[in-house]
Length: 333
Image (cartoon, rainbow, N blue to C red; front, side, top):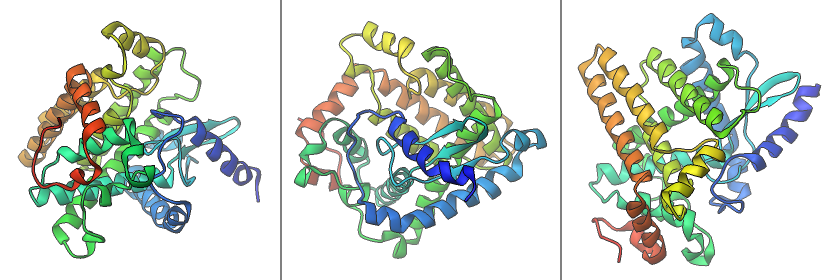
């Protein structure tokens, strides 16, 4: 075993502990045996997306800048949304994509597709994320279930409902592709050194987002799944309602937040999507990109609205777990 192969498991494990999350003790949605059995499938699919969905559309300069990067898959990271690139001194960097994160995105994609196609309320998706963030102990046994059982999705729905399978795969694949392209953007743009400040880090996030949107446009990939990823991240990460005042929130953004999914970042992504829509030759693609832009802007407004965030916190406090499987919209008490 060469030196690089020997240190990757250690680096991946360390990185998983250091990844940004909303809490130090994140809820575990999947057991180790389940994740271990599924890691090979998840790794094969992400490798395919990396090589055929992204590298094939890179310029020679971009391929050179990202040459040698590996994607590693520890079972879990610090929370269900952990995903990051980690530079290794003297070696090519790795992208840490925990199996639990990939499964969470996949399951959330399936749950959203099932509920949307069957005209069920989509409110439980945000409420589920709020419960994971604020009150995971309210689930039976004080252990939150994964998205599929939590949101009332029949077991192995992808085998019996082709429409759900097709739509969920579109969500999942484009979400994973956006994440991989974003991390490749950090490599291409030379973001290996520690950022000088929170503002520097946030600027890098926006630059990596721009690289991802541009790269995906070259492959004619419309990143519908990015909406779900960013919606989940916005629901799980700190928001305005987690702080006592606007000033405290702004101070956190200015001094501590390194990878926030905040209004500024979401509006920036919305502008990127609208720019792509104006350039699109296909009217259907342009319409979809404008829809994505509007959704991202709406999520950004929710993140910055303390009343809405407080409402979701109240849902986490009062909603019974079984209510997440309901068919209709229903206000929280």
